[in-house]
Image (cartoon, rainbow, N blue to C red; front, side, top):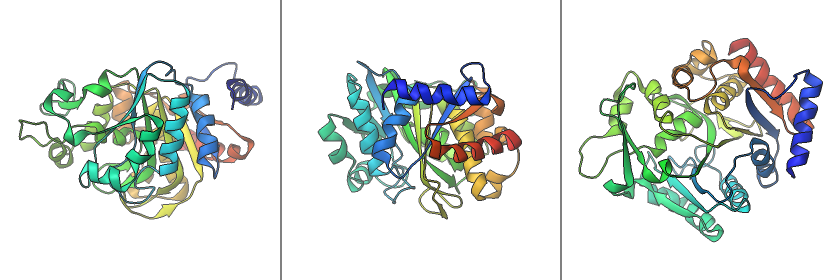
Length: 323
């Protein structure tokens, strides 16, 4: 869809709702059954500037379990194709799996055979040499010695992330865009015995540490595939829901707050359901660190089609009342 039509939808929304100008934080919502058709629409609405840039892409391949445990193959294909249509200098998927060998997970999920014909590179981060990592100092975080992120991520011209909608039973409580960043972090660095995943999962500050990873890098777009999700269990299995939504934003705090509101609309775990959304550890710490917006009142849910309006209103209502 051309940019003009997206702007028309956008301006129509604000005319009807009485807003005088652009919102502080935009979260775009599409109700759909067709990823290939609507992902370009979400991309156009969010509007990341990627032409001529080296683009780093983070998906969700923590395991090879079926969607929504991992990125749906159609989402990966449609998002990568949309990126390549914008003529970046390059596109590289950066991924580390928490449940098994990353290379094995990617092969089982047909990631390389999907991306290679598009001209994209695939890097399994648990194969990265020591020179491929950058140390992020621990100051101002709960990480004892800091953490390591890929140099390829930090030197990229643009970062795009696609996450899923699900709860997390191993201490994260929910795994959306902020938690997806754990898959960029080194589990171990060659030459060192320190296990950063062991440190993370044994810490009483696990959820704050998740947020702190996100302080170290910027994103240009997050696409949340909420066609289905888990409202209990997770990350690899759980009770399924089918919202039939694609959600996009530049703001990781805002999109995660919207994701939590969506989970609440179906009924979820006590850790997700209880308390103000912006008081939940991941969101509160990320907001405190300036990763994204700091107040639910800053978030505007913008439906991109007429069929999307009721879903956007439902999420917005929960954010307004429980944010």
